Image (cartoon, rainbow, N blue to C red; front, side, top):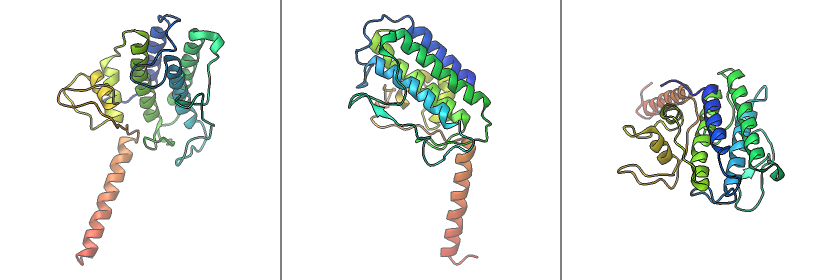
Amino acid sequence: MPPVTADDVGLAVRLAVDLLREASPHGWAGRAGSLDWDCWETVEHLANDLLYYAVQLGPQNPPLDTHVPFELRHKRPDAPLVFVHAERDAGPAGLVQVLEACGALLVAMVRTTPSRVRAHHAAGVSDPEGFAALGVQETLVHMHDVAEGLGLAWSPPSALCSRVLARLFPQAPGGADPWPTLLWATGRAELPGRPRLTVWRSDSTPRRDRQAAGAKATMASTRSAGASSGIR
């Protein structure tokens, strides 16, 4: 499976921006799909996600045990945590511009950061491709939420969904259309014979890092077994 790239982030954000620009200026206070957030909050959260991923890659030596310490705040108790706000007076058009700008920063950071770089994320210490995949995942899935809330049709490219699934959800079932599978993997839909998930987690750890960790664990287990059986 090809990797997730900066171009994939750019495509996902461009598709999102194009659709949101078609939306009515009314209805942004309505609930975004199954979330407890309204449509404005969800797009603002998405913009924050993209910028958050970009800044993790910014330091010369990114922290591996915690995020770059921007202060995160709730605008109301049940709202998402954000550290960048869109001006309400700028309306939905301004909010979409904020989303576009944050997406462009993630594209630039993924494109220019060496693949050897690692940075913290709750889903696993990640490389630039992992942050690209997280950005695409958040864009595709939260646009599903917002599109439901605003009454828009949203169906992203299958190839884009496939690359995100391969990177972030390697255990996801095969055989189904990639877009419904991504919605299932993120707790938003059922698949035939598979109920909707109530708890889910992506894994942004690079595949080669997972393999190396698995090999070390196997070696440690072998040494432990050898020691307990008297083997030297």
